[in-house]
Image 1 (cartoon, rainbow, N blue to C red):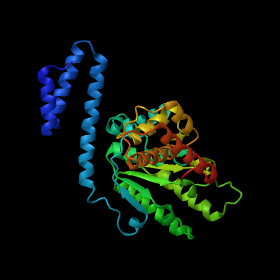
Image 2 (spheres, one colour):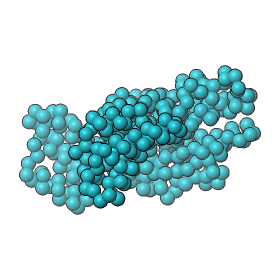
Image 3 (cartoon, one colour):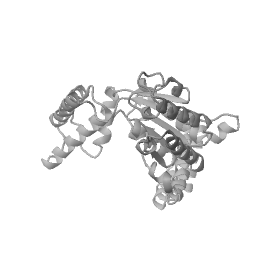
Image 4 (tube, rainbow, N blue to C red):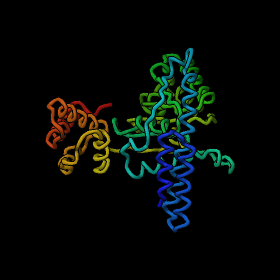
Length: 332
């Protein structure tokens, strides 16, 4: 355990904004724990300090990049840029998806170490799943955790009736991958990568897909490519082979349902909720629909001038989302 002096030093360094001193004292605590036989805690503390240091470095890099990383000229009509501060803890993922994402982040953070052994980190991710299950949010978290800008590709501006123009615009995007390291999101990628064997396919679409596959194959940048689709069955089989990691997003399980609600209502008193009723009412809804229902219940609570969110209000809001889903389909 930390000594009294170490605890005081941690508080003072935090108040002064002295990260270097804060990390130094934390490492002293880890060393003391290791000597006293608490090896697991010591390693966890060291890993935490290393992670926080890395975040500090990447945050500084983002601050210096924000002013200059703005797509210009024709590229400006093809990309939109943002600088998410989202974190892994913001997501409500299944254990297997969480493990996949943590592995991707670890490999990206340790890409220099991997390079020394002739290895490359996972950097091409294909996210598949129903609308509202967290695919776009995952891209934001990857950018936020790595301190990178998030570039969303505007496929409506890339795809034209002239194949030559579409290929040229794709080339601009893949050139940007090399020039500016970031997370590049191709949402609804099935618009580019539909199955070439589909009966309604035309030669034009086939040539666009071939160009996209070629650019993916040739891309040797340090950027992270994230492609997302609600319709994996529409994708050409060749596309799957171009990605290092395929993440399959399903509707939230009971644990994820509770996490989504707790995250969305973090500033409200909810310890009185009947989680059994709430989780039952949320079955079949996506992450986004559950978050929307939680927000609606919160607004009703505020406007009714109540101090606590009631189970009935939350269950009612979830039932309302379920009715909308049944009538019109899940939100995109």
